[in-house]
Length: 150
Image (spheres, rainbow, N blue to C red):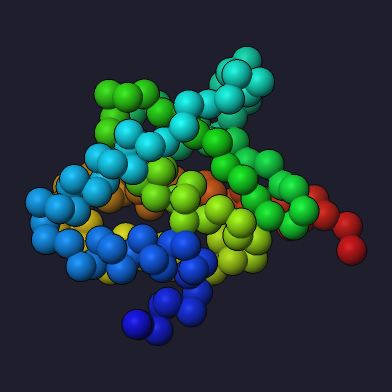
């Protein structure tokens, strides 16, 4: 365990450990598994694509929507199947932040995926897109806190 583990939701820390233990080929296979497991955008949100947050840092069209319920954030992603790398990262983030509070999401280190070993198997451009996805998720978490009244 590293010092950053305390800032990472438990589910995300488990995923990180799985990637750290994998060799480079296995890291790519795991990323594709998360890509395949990313759920489709719920039908109720399909009409909102233009209103969703667009992640401009990604080459592929990536849209994110967040909903707050019982103090937790839930994210929804619209990413084409032709972009398996960013779909995989979105799948990691979806599973890794399930049940997390906005405060926990905000605390995730912006480069946590480097510790997973993804910098060894992905291009800098893809890593930049991943950082963009996380940055937008964090902004949504901050916005959800700003919208709450104490």
